[in-house]
Amino acid sequence: VEMSGLSGREMEGCRNLLGLLDNDEIMALCDTVTNRLVHPEDRQDAIRAILVYSQSVEELLKRKKVHREVIFKYLATQGVIIPPSTEKHNLIQHAKDYWKRQSQLKLKEIPEPVTKTENIQLFEQQAKEDKKADKVDFRRLGEEFCHWFFELLNSQNPFLGPPQDEWGPQHFWHDVKLRFYYNTSEQNVIDYQGAEIVSLRLLSLVKEEYLFLSPNLDSRGLKCASSPHGLVMVGVAGTVHRGNTCLGIFEQIFGLIRCPFVENTWKIKFINLRIVGEGSLAPGSLLKPAITFEQSDLEAFYNVITLCGTNEVRLNVKQALDSGTGDQALCSGNEELLNKRELSLPDPLKH
Image 1 (cartoon, helix red, strand yellow):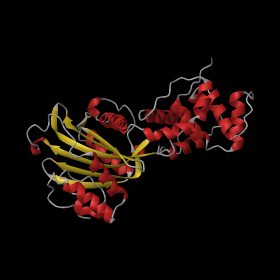
Image 2 (cartoon, rainbow, N blue to C red; image 1 turned 30 degrees about the vertical axis):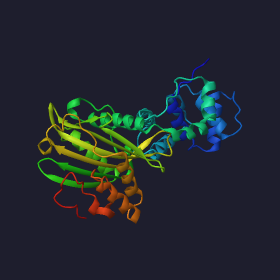
Image 3 (spheres, rainbow, N blue to C red; image 1 turned 60 degrees about the vertical axis):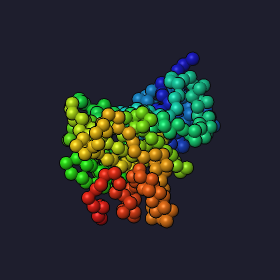
Image 4 (cartoon, one colour; image 1 turned 90 degrees about the vertical axis):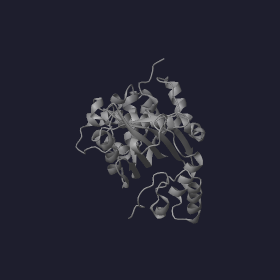
């Protein structure tokens, strides 16, 4: 049996990219790819045939009927921002690299390579697969996300050699928020908003300050929660290093939202990052960093994010704070609730 040259991730990406072509272009491309041996009944049938009979991503995207502008527009819709003058062969490489990065957050395995018959069955069963998304193992998602995030971020440290992959704003929603607490030689809390500034601030931690964040992914160091609306929260604790020196610990909370345009892809909506220097820690705290809140607190955090300013929010946040586990809120409308009880910041942040 002849084997297809496209992986499951590449197929999904190419299917979305081909969706930007008009009907006449799709039908003409189908004729070219299949040498006019397949007669599709409609547009979707033609796209299936194009994907099944393409031997590789390069073979498909290098075709004249797949214009450079189409690849550029697809990448822009996915948050991959590159110069408009980029040549077509470089755009193709950017697309391949993007799909490779997304595969690291893949939640279900698709055997690769698969036969053409199985490829066709894959598309026919897409609706059924979407329904299965409700059964996502969020603990596994949290572990996979943390492996991906910290490996990618730490790889930007110049002491560790060339980066393994591209860091940038494409991993965040455009209005992402970062709240950064640090308690080292001084205590402070700073807010950042926007994909560009948040990605640059996190990058500077490893690229300019030469830090290395080592997450503790056991049951005490990693906690996950999800909301009925699809927001997933991941809380992780770990140690902070520079070279051979352990400088202290960190606690980090991520809010993730699934990208509706690309299967099994999640982007970062908000981050709370707290770094405490070794001199500010209780004895023994460095041995096994543990996240200091429970799943119920993550759920209260979700209520703050989504229902900012309502009485229900104030009640939920008050309950979280009264539990003694600290707050994880980012909502500026409840600023008096945002100062982490454990951190003993000198003054609430003023706007």
